Each structure stands twice: as C-alpha cells, then as structure tokens.
Amino acid sequence: MKRIPTFVPVVALALRDEMGRLLLQQRLPDKHHGGLWEFPGGKVESGETPREALQREIAEELGFDLAADDLSPSLLEEEGAESPIVLMLYTCARWRGQVRACHGQDWGWFTPEEADALPLAPMDRRFLERMHGEFLFQSK
Image (cartoon, rainbow, N blue to C red):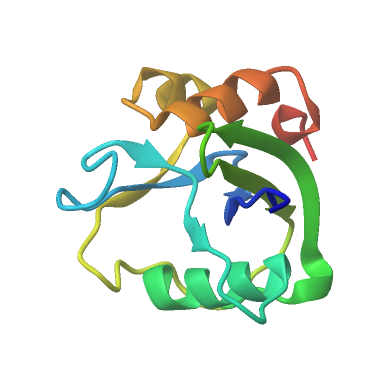
C-alpha cells in the first residue's frame, strides 16, 4: 500500500495595532504548550480554506472580524515527523470589532522586544525570529 503523507494544517495571525505592536494570546493551561504565548489562530477544519479557518478561529477566540481579502500569507513553519503540524502565518492590516478573551485566555499587544521576552510556543518563537527586520516590523 502506498503511503500518503498527512499533516495538520494550522493558521495564525500576525496583527499589528496602530503603534506597531503585535497581538499575542496565551495558550490555556490544559492545551498543548499550555501557558505559552502565541500568535492567535487554530486548526483548519475539513472543508475550510486557511483564510476561512483563520476568520472563524479569531471570531471564536478573540471576538473580532477579519475579511478574507485583507489576509496575506507571510510565513510557514513545520514541526513533527509522523504527522507534522504545518503552521501558516497570515498578516492583516484591518479588522472590525474589539479584542476580547472569549475563552478566558490572556492576550495583549506587545512590541517586538516585549514579545521576545515572553515564553513563546516553539513555532511562534521561530516566526518572531524570522520577522525581525522584515516587513512586519517596518513602520507603516
């Protein structure tokens, strides 16, 4: 039987406010990497595009809306061997609504230096390292 590779697609959002700070959330204690900080997002469900999944996850977790046309793919990370997680990071310039913790998780806006000091999930740490000096930290 031919082996068909599988992976778990996950999406995340790199969102900056008007002061250039990044939106990060803390993973709930009972989740994988519990207590660590991350770019918000989640798994892509069957039948969803990555953009649709990101819109759904952000609305469910943080209570604000994104338009699919405003999302731009920017970085990709992969972790694991048997059934790897492929994390797709999108940037977005606009959103509607106010950020709120719908599941009780902590969240905040952080400068790149403040984000560096946080205990980040491993793939999110790699994203942040790759973002230094990139377009995400350039002034608007």
